[in-house]
Image 1: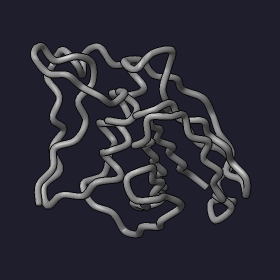
Image 2: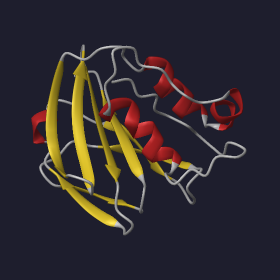
Image 3: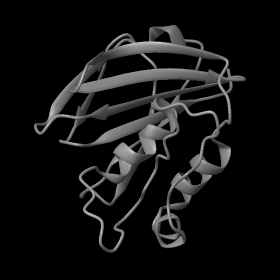
Image 4: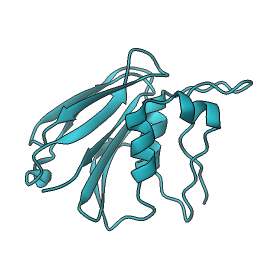
Length: 153
């Protein structure tokens, strides 16, 4: 199967039902033999620099994967490792807000990471630092998502 994730912003004539953070999370959650980013130049150019940097550094293959949490058709959280970096991504496929509780204690050797999630609307982002812990809670808007990157020990 081939799937082309990551469509940021609006595309004329296309009704997108997911947030930009949801789309960004698909770059970690879905696998394809050849990973393509589907966006058009206007979508990528409108993204903040930290999102562009994230996409530039996204690995082409993974060394390890861990299922963190999920329920078919509702939500999923997946962690993937490439080299010395862990990527954790989650999406909410539901029509209601979802509180996700995660145990990221397996990342305790990392001091902190970057969290990119939904901003004030579906076409914006928010970035914060995050520390791996046993009990991390993230609130996801309907059709929203997040990515975390932990690197350097």
